[in-house]
Every structure is written in C-alpha cells, then in structure tokens.
Amino acid sequence: MTQDTRPRDDSVRVHGGDSFLPVDGASLRYRDEGQGQPVIFIHGWTLDLDMWEPQVAALSGAFRIIRHDRRGFGLSSGNPSLAHDLADLRTLCRHLRLRQVAMVGMSQGARVALEFARSFPAALSCLVLDGPPQMGAAGIRDIPLTDYRALACREGIDAFRREWTRHPLTRLNTQDRRAHEILSRMIGRYPGNDLLQAPGESMLAPAPWLPSAMRVPALVIGGELDLASRQAAAAELASRLPSAQRATIPNAGHLCNLDNPSAYNEAIRDFLARQAGPYRR
Image (cartoon, rainbow, N blue to C red):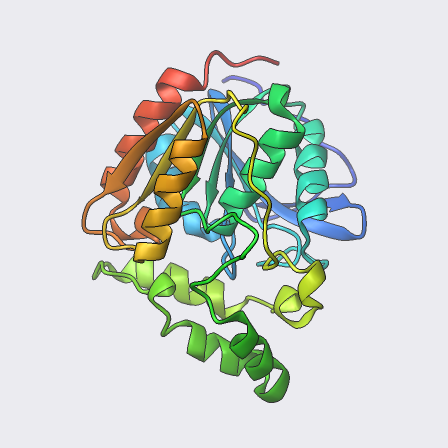
C-alpha cells in the first residue's frame, strides 16, 4: 500500500470526505482526491465544490483533484471577495505543498482563476475557463443583480433562491436525476452573504480585463446552449489571451459540466494531459 504523504495538520478538521482549513477570518471546506498532476477546481456563483462530482469520478484516476467551497459559499464561512479568494487559494496551495497547479474556473470562478493567473503566473501550469462572464468595466449584464439584491433584502434569501432557479444560467438540459439533485442542493445552501453586502465590495462587481501578455496556456470552454452573452464573452476572452484554445460542449447550457459530463471531461482531460506538465513537489 502506498503511504499518503499529503500534509495533515491539527488545525484541519476532517468530517466524512470533507476537510476544513482555517484561513484569515474564515474556514474553508475542501476535498483532495486522486493522484497525479494537481488540478484545482473553482466553482461559480451560488454553487460549491459539489458541482464537480462528475469530474472527480472521471478524472481522479489521472489527476489529483482539489476542490473547495469558496469563502462564503457552500459550507465555507466568511464573506466573499476577490481578494479573499486569491489569498485563500494561496493558503490552500501552501497547506497542500503545491508549487504549481492547473486550474479550472467556472463562471465567476473563471474570474478568480484569471486573477490568480495575473497575480501568481509562476504557480500555474494552465487554465480552463468555463462559461466566463463579461470581464469589462460594464460588469455582469446577464444577471439582474439589483433586482435580486432587492428581492433578498425584502423577502429573504429563500425568495431569491426560488427566483434564481428560473434563470437560464441555472437551467439544466439533462434529464439526469443526479445532476438535478446536485444543483438543487448547492443553491439550497447558498447563504447569500455576497448578494446582501455592498455592491462595491461584492464579487458581483465589475471585473478588470486580464492583460493580453498572459502566456499561461488556456482552454476557454462553454456549452453550445449557453446564453449568447456568455458565448460572446468566451469568444472575446479567447481572442485576448495569446495562448487560448476554444471548446464547445454539445447539448449543454451554462452548467455544461453537469449537462454533458462525458464530453466535458473528455475536453478538459485532453487539455490537461497536454498542458499540466509533470507533477512538481
């Protein structure tokens, strides 16, 4: 039997398959599964690490899959912000003794991955950017944030959750019962801390563009049935990144990793196998 030499620390609480890592002002839930080149998966808005269940099942035989609930989402505590996301990722990498990783960022998580690439390029081997939002000064146009914030403040977070499940970005095309259960569970435990905080401090605020000088290999991926705004944002992002490739997942919407996991897994497996490089301790 191969001994597991991954770091264990008394400050990390383990419950079932989850571990909880103390960070500045919060506790992060994470999972670390599989063997091989480390790949960190970063979820989107109102979601959490459970969204990556189909990828863990398919890819953990070839890659070390690390996923976490971003601060303020899922079972992680604290209030979300871009600065916290970057600091938390660095803390997680240091705790797991990762010198270089690949990253898969979905929707709002793609923004986090891009900012990590801007801040710590040497720590990344490659990026997968899944369904990214528009990154210009105008901010996110395809989510009625003002209306959602008002609804949550007026009627509570459950009212927002009910309304959000009707939005095209949360619509699944698959009939797979397990995918629908995963999505329902994630939205049902979204606490709404970032929705209720000041817009200027929220992760929903406008995002700056990543400099075109970034040379980290990137795969920009999305569902063929995603919103036209997200498809346009993906095309523009790919055109701005010098080392970007594109991939479209058939019969899938915004949540293409749940809608068509077999095609999604094949696309990112091929990219990661070519670009993630040998594991460096």
